Image (cartoon, helix red, strand yellow):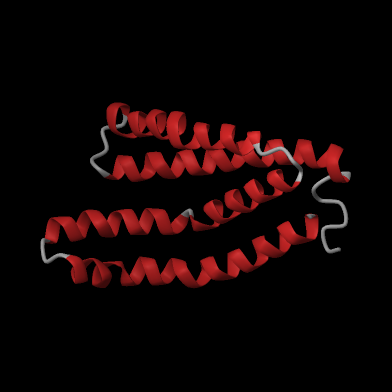
Amino acid sequence: MRAALFYCWRVGFYMSLIAIPILWLGGPLVMRLFTADPEVVRVGVGYLRVDSLILPFYMMLFSINSLLQAFKKPIWTVWISLYRQAFGVAFFVWVFIGILGFNETGVWFGTATAVVTGWVVAMALTIRIAKTEIGGLWVHATG
């Protein structure tokens, strides 16, 4: 299981290295395929650029979810998802928009912060569970 997780992460990082510049640089072109409205393009490009930077965290979260299911601990994926998609998004969007005064980019940064902090929670939990299930997450990581 450990080897599968690290293989997924390795492949995912390579895919992210390809996808990030495509989304970052190609975002304006892709957005203009759907609309000519410059304001919609601006907002869409902002979203694509912020979201592109957290692709590796999404990838690691999804891999962790699979690992937790392999450990027969799928309930933890529910709690991580509830944190990330409910509490985290609401809280961090409120912080960026309500407290820090961001415009719509506060929604993108709030969502990104929820994903990254969800990854932190998932990693801490997975490290703890892996210790009892397979002797640790980092042991024999190359095996």
